[in-house]
Image (cartoon, rainbow, N blue to C red; front, side, top):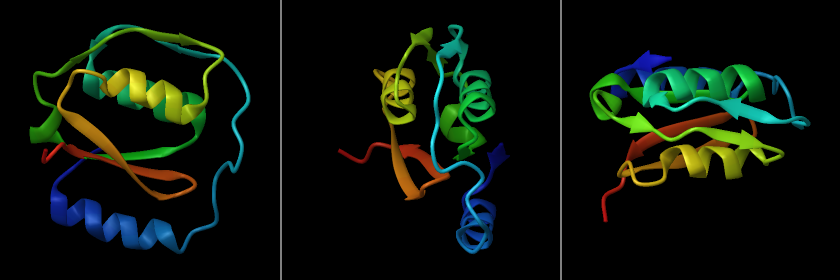
Amino acid sequence: MKLHHSTARLIGLLLATAAPVSAAFAGDINIPAGTLGAALDAYSAQTGIHVLYAEHDISGVRSKAVSGDLSPDGALSRLLSGTGLVMHRHSTNEIAIVRDVQ
């Protein structure tokens, strides 16, 4: 999902009131290396977790392949490793990807 910051905030508020899509994830993760946008979309499709990000934050960023019996947080941490981006969980089924301010 490609969003601007203000749009992401609005959608975040709307999703915060929605029922969770999937409280638990069971299964293998299989995300090929490539653009971070495609990897995040694959992550969302495989885990059922909504991923919000600003297109300009991920533009030109590449991710490594991630596969195996991993928790959703573990898989996302591996996808974001070395990108300068971090995740902020808003709810069980919603994560925002933002630039690391450190």
